[in-house]
Image (cartoon, rainbow, N blue to C red; front, side, top):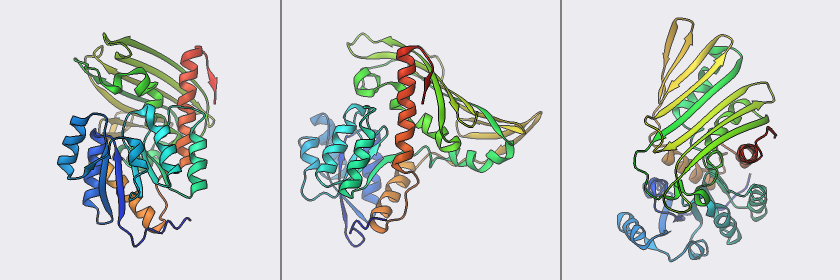
Length: 330
């Protein structure tokens, strides 16, 4: 266990980004008695000024200036996926602790380098995976033994969006391949079922009028686990879809776990038993407080970097499968 020397110190924080995740982080840091939110580096001057006014903090001209800010202890990275790896690296080299929203990086060869760099610098590198903290995942862990031996799962997340305006989450380069960008879909199952043997993946993209953007995407992946578990993942969003879907099913030899949004049940033949699922609200705050507690006391976090890097490795295999149109061994 590393003693970061922060137990008696107010942890000074800088945020990269001004979007939804950045706002939830800012609220959590300001609500904590153990952190002081000092500054933010945003993409546009307008959004950065609004963010600064809302949270009464300073603006910094660039993320490079922020990570080298002499008074900061912790950098929280909440901006476009393409820049995550570079900012993590520079923040660690500047001797800062780091929180980064998944994915850690879009570069498949970089994740282990960044983990090793954090270890070398004796700094925290925490990749957020709030899906592990969420009510659905906790309910799965609690009730999975009730369905016997699981052998098949299906998870579908589809977001219908009639009007798609240019946004980085619909940009090929800034967002990345969907199963890499949304690696939480894979991490949820590697956390439950362990190592993956092979993957296959198919995808389709509809180009937007604006260069470099798509208006819709659909991705389908099959994950064959080493324990013979099979998981089918569907990810879709954009204006090609007319309805939303967020369903998760896990089949076992003694029943089925079914989640429709945050409503859960166990099915055995004609019998259905409702199960309680906690709300998704407050997960960024929970994650933030766990990080602050870890920095102060050394209490272990809910996920380690090795597990996060492994799910990213599986996600990269889905991209390779799509590109080569073949099954890829992990």
